[in-house]
Image (cartoon, rainbow, N blue to C red):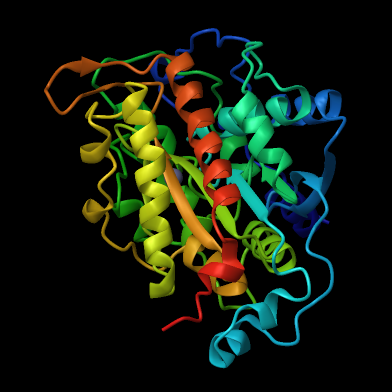
Amino acid sequence: MIARLALALACLPLCGADFAIPADYLREVEPPPFWVGDVDGVARFLETRVRKGKVTRIGVSAGGRPILAVSYGTPRLGKGTSTYSGSLGFGDIRAFLGPQAAKKVHVAMAGVHGGEFEGIVGLVNLISVLESGKDLRGKPWPAIAEAAAAIDRIVIVPVANPDGRARVPVRMLAHRGEDHTVQEYFNTGGRRDGKLIGWPQCKEHIPLDFSTTQFPGGYPNDAGVNIQHDDFLSPRRQPETEAVLRLASEERPDLMLNMHTGASFIQPLRTFMAPAMMPHFDAFYRRVRGRLAREGLQSSDDPAAAGDPARERVMVYNLDTALHLVSGTLAILVESPAHGFSRSKRTGAPFRHTPEDLLNAQLLTHEEALGFLRESNGLAGWNPARR
Ligand SMILES: [Zn+2]
């Protein structure tokens, strides 16, 4: 009986109240109405505001929370004649994509790390645009609506790691000038003495034993695993990982974005993937960062300087690599600036992204991503099998 009770308690989802977070860190500001970025707020939004899209549960987290997706349009129907790996050996990805290889499919997800709210807020507002033409401020985004209409299928996963997001018990942090301590604490966690675990030290222990921490941060799910670095090829992989890998495998998306927070200005990162995909990453990078520079939302206002992809080194093998390897997708992690602290522009001039700026940067990124996909040849034309 006691053993059963202990098991039941161990399976209860964890929340912020289970940890001794310093009271000052919990200081919040009342978020503007468009800032929908917590698990319950997102679920409420999906339930009450999605009419054109279809809301589905693509999985259940380690802590028992649903992982929700919204889809628009019709997927690639029919299967190919080969596996993705087989299509690479054959030399043409169309053998994997199947009879509707020419369709365009886009997937975007956020909240892989629970302390990173900007991408979640961005995707909720993107859904609002797809539903009504306007974001939650009432601002119209006609270019998003137009590009989306030309894409056959769009799937959005606003919170891929609901355990991590639910553990971070704030909706909007107080702004702390240039001090990133609190943001970092909610991301990578604090050791038992309260000192930051820090990045990349947070990756030394996967799974993370929460009893070694004061607060484990928003990176891991309730099983302690940062799914950005799960054991992808193992049958023991986490349910969140399983859900997004299955989604990629079934949808076979041309482009798949993984929205994070962790840069001074919006920064797409170069995934470890087939070399044939790199020119397309470069084109995406130039387009997104160039646009943001023209809008004053980059470290440099010069689109050529801000949009130079040569600065982006190939990352290590991670979730985005795994998503690429199950589907061929051009998988790109996009880092956002944070709302809780600010950095300077390249000139040294201090620059504070307001919550409005952060949302604009997110939606401009999605506008350029959709435009990029619409105008490109897509996965069938990029053909990662090309040597
Ligand atoms: Zn992250």
